[in-house]
Image 1 (tube, helix red, strand yellow):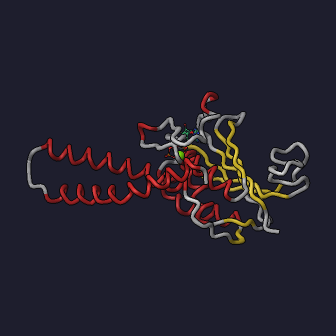
Image 2 (cartoon, helix red, strand yellow):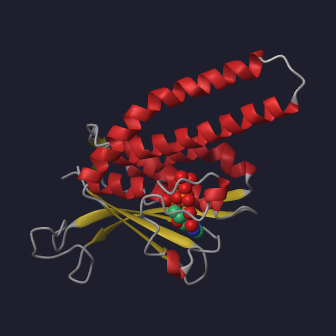
Image 3 (cartoon, protein in one colour):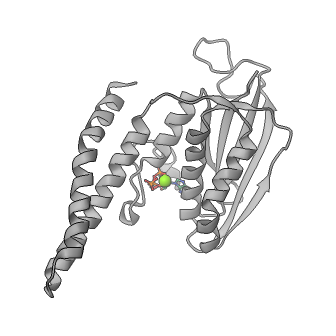
Length: 240
Ligand SMILES: Nc1ncnc2c1ncn2[C@@H]1O[C@H](COP(=O)(O)OP(=O)(O)OP(=O)(O)O)[C@@H](O)[C@H]1O
Ligand SMILES: [Mg+2]
């Protein structure tokens, strides 16, 4: 892992426990303090919100920097997406987001850590959902693709992850939100880059996604669609 990653992970571990103690303490005081003084209650509530926010950042950092052993197995990507959808179903229907599944049922198995890849789809779907506060459509698509010369990451260099003619499994997640502003497109994968700080965003969602995909020798790209909205494309090596 890079030095920055190790540093982040070390700090996050050190801060996690004290934060948990503060949270428990505030919860306890909120229940026990017997006063009509509104300032005391609002102060406790500020502490609680701030601690929750710090906790979210720390959890995100741990997620982002963790290389803790992957549990790699042969998995069907459609099933992984199905279980992600199951986890999010309630949230999506409450937010008037319609689901479309366009699965190729014949995709070969991929070698992945199921929990990590579920996290990837959750982070991407949450971003899509948050970009559609008044509802919209969320589409999941899977298919295979045989790589040709012009595809990214194909080549003869040693660091190129894919071989010419290799078949990959691809997943796409599309939304009908406003898309990503052009001047943000090259920053969205940076740790802590967020346009949603006011709504509790940490900016660690997509950097974790990229990290997890790299650990799987996979790739992720996010683009705006011509018809509006954003589209994430994820590429996975197949289990040969
Ligand atoms: N589907 C999308 N539509 C529009 N903008 C998006 C989309 N996905 C990501 N973004 C932009 O990319 C930024 C970074 O996303 P990322 O998931 O890393 O952080 P976040 O969502 O802001 O915070 P967190 O993931 O902690 O809630 C977002 O703040 C948003 O501006
Ligand atoms: Mg996010």
